[in-house]
Length: 200
Image (cartoon, rainbow, N blue to C red):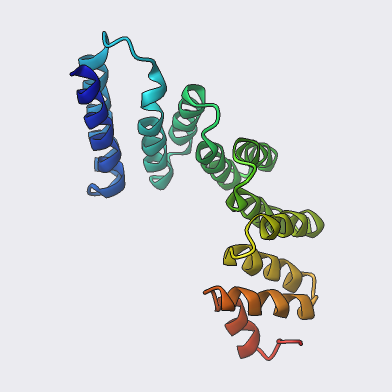
């Protein structure tokens, strides 16, 4: 019975962060639910792994409030409970990036990839990060790997196209923009077309 209560309250706590009110209210409500959950299930004999998603959602709420240290604490706790929680590394990387701690951000993106090596999403995220640092060769490598992992992932073509555009390689940028458009994202193609930059 206690296990059922625990599962239900974890779902409720996640719902507070995802669907409930303003972010400040979500954090407060989530904290209260978490304390209640710990009090009710302290003697159920289960480990803390069940709490990882709750910590993750609370960290996301703090991130949205721009309370970065609190967000990092939440992601740290999530990772402590579930070392293979790729989204926790990914989102902590985003916080580090916003704080200008690029080395830590890249380390976390590498850990996200290590936790989910078959997901193209984290390669694209690191591609975008390298692109922002003007490390275009590394950016291209990551987005190209994402394309190999998932040939129908439009975001990989879109962001690789942006890297090519930044390198002034308009022919390759056009090729990726066309592919991204075919897959459902026409934004890069539209930009190139509007500015008469398409090169076939």
